[in-house]
Image (cartoon, rainbow, N blue to C red; front, side, top):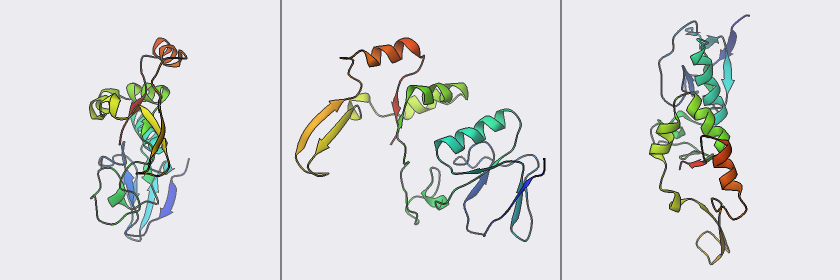
Length: 164
């Protein structure tokens, strides 16, 4: 297979290696030429949970990848906060049991759990008239009244997690 060739402007956020947000140095066959062309065996578009996970998984199998994202690098996790950028927080913050199983598979489950705030701080979906308005109802999505949480715990070694 031929490597993917992309023309990257000097300010485009592109990170190579296992984790786009961790700044892991590239190894293998990706190379950047003086004219701004990057050659890489695998190009992953989007540094969200799926893109970063795919990059980590490919790395485990010795396949180098380059992750590109339309968001400025300063807005990504590990970037310089407050230096421009549309997003300053992750867009996905609730990680379902299957996602946590995948985190376990690549050795990140314990780190996610260690970074997670206490469950009482995030287990409610709150509905209100406005962000700071009157609360209409708060629903505990970890409540086991219907048996769903018990079923997840019985069926999976992992449970839901939250990062913000």
